[in-house]
Length: 230
Image (cartoon, rainbow, N blue to C red; front, side):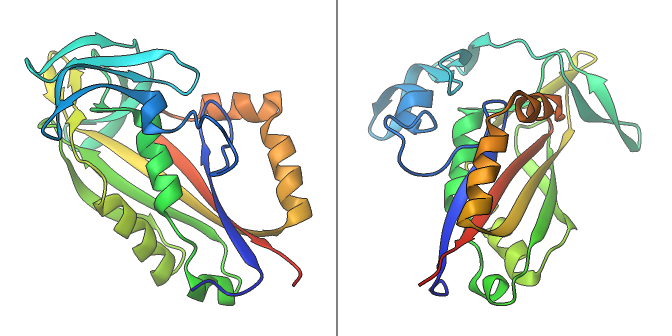
């Protein structure tokens, strides 16, 4: 149970700005909006289209032939293993989740809960998790590279373990390649007034420009506990 006096919200920080988990119809971060195709006996069949929250096509994948029909161009630099080091490189094909990347991030956002023990002591800060997307399209080498508290670290790890683990791997110099990725989860406690100011700031052009400047291999979400007077 959460301590009385707190309402916990999740926000994902991406190119479209902050997104609250409630009061939006239709929800642009829902599976119905971002992932469209047919299923047979609970399995995806035929061509599926995956979209951004603004309705732009990101990926078309044919589950019958296991082929990519369309992949939105991505000229970003990613961390790729070169010898014994991770170095930023522009890739022939960028890595991406087989599905909607925005829906995956929204799922993380909706699933993470602010641990009660952290709320009770006013614990705030960031959990940073690193992981590798291998050339086989699966993730390995998960590591907490920036710890906040045992409870917060465990909560982030719990949610990541629940996610689908099928990726389209990177292609570098003509071969599938391992890439390194990071997830930042910011745990914050604030008043309702501070929360409203944050929402207003996030809708401004400066915040959107900052989101666009983030490396593609770094994703970021916020879990906000809003204190209320009872």
